[in-house]
Image (cartoon, rainbow, N blue to C red; front, top):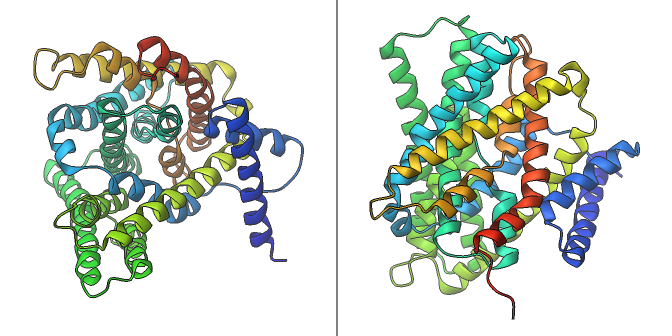
Length: 402
C-alpha cells in the first residue's frame, strides 16, 4: 500500500476513534485529538505525516475558511460590522505590536523577527470553541461574534504577516509609504476580487444545472480554486476563500427566496461542507498533537515559552477589552461576559502554524519562532479549550439541561 494512503487511513481511523470516545466522556473533540496525537507520536508509532505549510494551505485551510464563511449571514455581519472591524482590523495590529514589543524587550529578539512572530500569532482560530458551541447548544450573537471576528482577523493577520516578512527580508529597512500602500492594496483587494470572481462564477454556472452534486462540485472549485489562484498571484488566499464563501452563501445558500442553488442543492452543500470541515479539523488537530510531541522545545527553554504564552494572552486582553469597551454605550454593545469569552476563546491554530512553517530558513530566530508557535497553539487548544466550558457555564452561556 502506498505510504501516503496508509497514513491517510491511519489518521482518519485514529481521529474517528477519538471522536467517539470524546463524546462518551464529554471531552472537547479537538482537545482529545491533540492529546491523542501527542501520545501516539511519543509512543514511537509513525502513523502520520508532519505538518507542512503546503499541507495546511492547500488542504486544510480552504475547507475550514469556506465552511465558516458559507453559513455567515451578510445581514448579521453588517449589523455588528463596526466592532468586528475594530477588533479584526486595528485589534490585529495592536495585538501584533504588543507581542512584538514583548519579544524584543523580554527575550532580546531583533525587531524584524519579533514583528513576524507578532503578526502570525495574531491570527485566532476558534475551531475548537465553535465545535464546543455546537456540542453545548450555544447559539446567538456570542457565537456570531467569535466566528466572524476570527474570519476577519485571519484575513488581517495574513496580510500583516506579508508586510512584516517583507520588512524582515529587507533587513529591517522599511519600504516607502507608497510601496507599502501598494503592497497592501494588492494583497487585500487582489484576494477579495479573486474570491468574488470565483464565487460569482460558481453561482452563474449553477444556473445551468439543478443537479445537487454538480452544485456541490462548483462550491468546491470556488473554495479551493480561489485560494490557489490568489496564492499564485501572491495575494491573500485567506481573503479570497472567505469572500467566495460569503458570496456563495448569501446569494446561493442562505437566501430562501432569491437563491441560485436548488433547495436540494442547498441541503446537500451544507452537509457536504460540514463533513469537509469535520475531516479537515480532525486531521489538523491530530497532526498538531503529533508534531508538538516531536518539536525540540529545549532550544527555546521553558522560561521563554512561558513568557511567549503570557505575552500572547496579554496582547489579546489588551485588544479585546479596551476596543470592546468603546461600544458599551452604543447599540453595538459587547457585554463584559461576551468580552471574557472573546479573550479566552481567542485560540491559535492552523493559520498561525502554516505561516510559521512558511518562514525562510535564513530568518533570524526562525527555529525559535516555529517552536514557540507550536507551544502557543498547544497551550491554547488544550488549556483554554478544556477550561472554556467552565467559563461559559460560569457566565451563563450554556443552556440549561432538562
